[in-house]
Length: 194
Image (tube, rainbow, N blue to C red; front, side):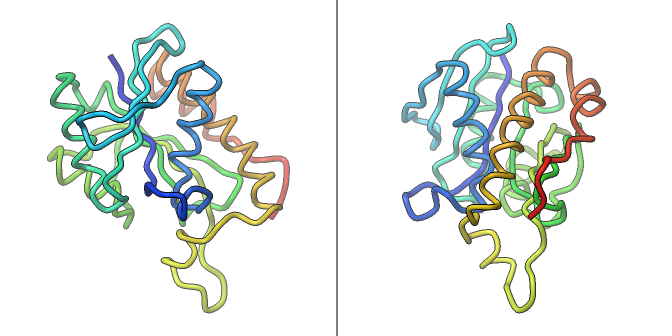
């Protein structure tokens, strides 16, 4: 069993915001694989099935970003998963430009509060993460305004390409592991420019 947790904030007002990039990726993957999300007792919407020949749970924590670890930690414990092998977290990243994605087998939270919550809950940073670039704030825009802002129409076209690439990276991670996914997908650059 593998767990792919897409991070975001629940609620209509956050649906299309940059901070919900993780939700958008797992939603797309679930649609492609004909899996359906349902509420659960784990503070998360879950979709279960097989992807790339592997039993998988797709999760969207419903705790709000800063408490994502509550849901992810509960799922890791329930399914008796080894985070270093069985967990992939999908999130937005201010430090990557829009149009890029980056998969790592482990690492720090890099200031991302959802990742910080998961690391705190699990007691380890030894788990894979797939980060989707949203770019740094511009001018007087704050980081909070950036992550909670909606994608523009032009950014949305770029994001669509990134989501497809991210789903491909997840399938590779599931079937072949983190090293193969990094080698194959970390060079991705969306064909549009913001």
